[in-house]
Length: 292
Image (cartoon, rainbow, N blue to C red; front, side, top):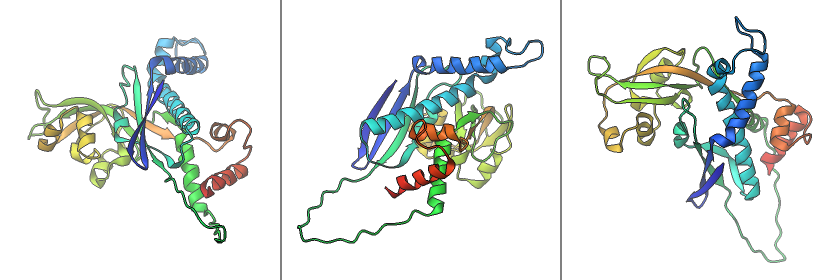
């Protein structure tokens, strides 16, 4: 496990969190064991389903959930240990879409951009007087922060069909001018984050898909700029600029981030065990944090 911190400019840093198989495998194995103990499948007694079947059915979703939890923990620890005066919450960068190989898990590297509060050093004479205005944090700001915390500590699930904020895992195949798969064309296993697709028509086409579905897309309209498109298709920047035509995307998996319920487990993950014990106190603490 490693966190590399790089300065992007005076008020922004990038945190690259690398999690190795040794870091996450024990947690994933424990979670799969819990699934095995509760699993019921035709032909097997409860708790006796072979681990191979459990891993095949739940492996990727459990891996995503455990990685998400570890990332949240490591980012918070790094910020606290290094006394970083951050503004807002870490934001996943475009690089995170290619964090690692979900089909053959090894090392994963997740990149986040973090905004820093500027350091101010002001000197005033002893006779200077100031009026301190206390700004009341409104309910909308509190709700936005609560929602963000729920998402940050949520878990990945495998819905039957995609919705507007889901992630699609699948394969791109370049098409010819007649709409057929181009022999020897560009092909790449990758992901599409439906949440960040800005083109309304393209976004609509990505909703309602299920594993095994195919959809023809303009890759420029389902990516976030040339850098993202290059990583998505595994091609160079020169190829990106010259790229025209559609690709067929075959959906292999649909992933959805389910926000964490507002309960004691969430309070403990954010503020430590037993520090906050009910929702009223939780929202008050969120308001205090926003108020600074």
